[in-house]
Image (cartoon, rainbow over all chains, first blue to last red; front, side):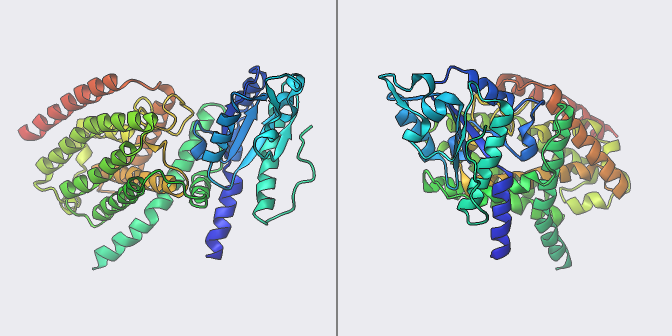
Length: 157
Length: 282
């Protein structure tokens, strides 16, 4: 049993499938997320696959501010992902609400609705920072599984 | 008894071979797209991770379908290694394919529903071809037993080259490769999400993936029957076939189901009938 458990944990850290949700972003960060999939950055090196289905995903990438219209959608997508899972908030808007923070229709950053593990600020966030965010999220998952220490920095600069 | 034990060992090794094949496939595909690509063991990491995820089930039919799919695929591989009857093998394999559709139809998700309908159309395209290939084998050897193929002294490919091409069509569809990846696929084609696999998650998705490995090895095994006289020839034939599959996957776009039916049934059946006539005359 111990051996199988070890193998499964290894698999968990080597195959993070991501699902990407545009929570009202201006598309700047979305373009950067999709840039990670191109041959220049090639995230499949790390086993990362972009899936279109939260049921298959391990990591949720959220871009844009959360507003009262789509906070239910965000929560719904998060709930459909089976455990263990991680959430990454991308861009100035995703991390805090950005320039829309004080707007009457805006709830704020992603962490107002669901727990966020890693923050990747930037306007827009760079693709290498996003990849770094996913790799850091794996360390967070590792720590949650009791296999390592929690990473000290969860805000990718 | 000895055959049975050898077949059981073969059955146990099949997922390992299938997973490694998938890993090499992904790596070569990445290189063809000027990417670096994942590790060769990536498919095993994926399946192990999926096995460790919390199960989320829509209904019990789904779970039953996943198990029946894996069991029938494994049973078909076992029958193949025991050098049993080709027709029995074909029917056992079909049960698995049907239950994959049943599992997808048992949930209300429109993506799974469309995927299931397309899977049925794919079965309509490749199953006649496989049956015709088996008929050709029986005309060449006089029986449907795999053991009788091994008793022949000449490779089947020399008398059935066109039926081998027809089997190549079936292989491409079974591998879920372009241009026939219309019901589900491994790439980031998102219009169907994952088709028949959409509503499966965690351990059940892992089961379907393992079943897929069994299917791939089985169809490659059927291809290997075409050069049974020497190991070197068999391996060379399989390598060339699989390399051609990867190349076709990378140079083709995903096509529609009417195109698939027209091409696979049109070209495939004409080639097959031509080859059957050749076998009949000679």
